Length: 278
Length: 278
Image (cartoon, rainbow over all chains, first blue to last red; front, side, top):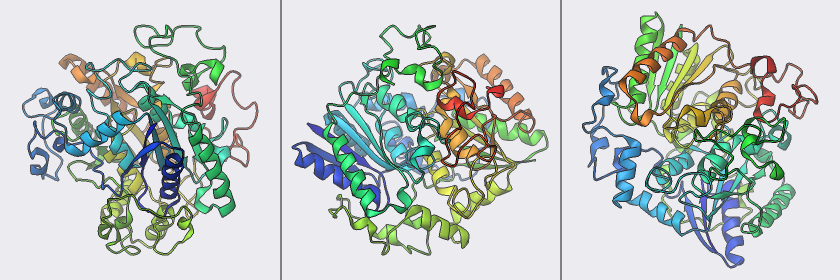
C-alpha cells in the first residue's frame, strides 16, 4: 500500500525524528511504498496568507509591511475589493489548479496515499505550529471541505484513507488516561482525530503515544518501538475509531445528535462514538 | 486594568481583524490599558527552532539546508552533542534571559497583562498555525511550565490573569452545541482553555463565539458585536470556567481524578470541571 509519513520536529536527532525514520524503514521493509514530508527539513511555510493563492494576489502579501495595527473602521470588512477571504480564495485556487506549488505537491501526496501517519511531539496539547500550518494550508476548500466536495464525516473527499497519529509526550500516561487531569488523549486530540481525519472522510485509528519522553531509558524506547511496529503492522487491519456518521441517521438537520441515541450517562465528546466501540 | 489582545488573521479587512479592533477600542474607551499582538502584521515567526535560543545555537538552524530526510540510525537521539532538546534549551534560555528578542517581548506583554484576549478564526477546529506558533514559542519552559516555576493547574506561573477566547466559525451554532456533531465548543477548545490557560494558572472564561461567519448579514454582525462588548465589559467579573485544581484534593499522585468525585454519569472532559458550574 501507499503511505505518507508526516514528521514535525526541528532536531534530526530527536526521538520524534528517530521514530519517523523507524516508521519509514519498517513500512518499507513490509513492502509498502512510503513517501515522507519532513516539515522542518522542507522549511515548510506554516502560515496561510495571500501568497498561497498567486493568481488572486500576485505578490500581494509581500507588499504589505505595516507593522502597526491598522486603524480601520469596524464595518469595512464588507468591502470585498482585493480582500483575502481565505475559504473563498482557497476554493477558487484549488478548483482552478492554481494553488502555490508547495501546497499542490502535498495535496498530491495526500491523494496518492492509502494511509497517513503523523509523527509529532505534543506541544501545548496539540500539534506543533509547523504541522498545524501543514493542515491549514494543504486541506483547502475544494480539496478537503466545502460545497465542491462530498459532505463531511464518513463520506468526505478523503474517504477510504486511514490515519494514524503517533505522538510523544513528556507527561506520564496516567495524566492522559480516562480520569487523567490533562483529559483522555483521544479527547485532547479530538480536533485532529474527529475534526480533521473523520471530517474529511479518513478513518482514524486510536492514537499511538509514548509518554515520559523527556528522559526515556533505552530499554523503554526499545519496548515502545516494538509497540509502534505492531501498530504499523496493523495499519490496514485495526478497527478505526467508530465515530458516528452524518448520514447514518444519528443526527438531525442541524447536525445535532438525536435524543436518546446514546447509551444512558454518556456525555461530552464520547457522544459522537458508537458505544459498542468505546 | 491591563489587557493584551492577540489577533491572528492575514486580512486586515477581515471580520476577525475588525473584531480585534473593536475589542481594543471598546476596552480603551472603558479606561483599560490595551496592548496588541497582531501576529500577521508582526510577521510572527510560527515555528520553534534553534534560532529561538541564540546562545546555544548561534546560526545553527539557518546553516541546516538538507531538504532530504536525514538517513540516521534510530538510536542516535541519545547523543546529546549539539542536539536541540526543545524543553531543556527553552528553559535554559528563559532562565538566563537569553531568548530571541521577539519571544522575550511577547513574554513581557503576557507578564504585564491582567487579561489576555485571543481573537481568531477557528481553522480545523483549532487556532491558526501562526497563533499556535505564538503559543509554542512564547510559553517556554521556565516561563509557563517546568520545574523552575510553580506547578500547573490553578497555582501556575500565570495565576491571577484572565483569558478570553473570541472565535469566529463558518459552522452553525447547533453543530458546536452540547449535542452538535463537531463537539461542544468548550470541549473542542479544551487544549487551549484547560491545556494552555488553566495549566499555566490563568482563569479562562467561557469562549465567545460568532457562527456562520462566511456570509454574515450586517444586522447579525451588529448584534454579535454588542454581545462581544457585553462580554468584554465583564472580563474581570464573569465567573471563570470552574476547572478542578490539582492541589484541591480531587486528584491522586498520578494526576488521575479520585474515584467517585464526579456527579454520577459524568464522563469525558467534563470530569475536570466542578459540576456546580457546568
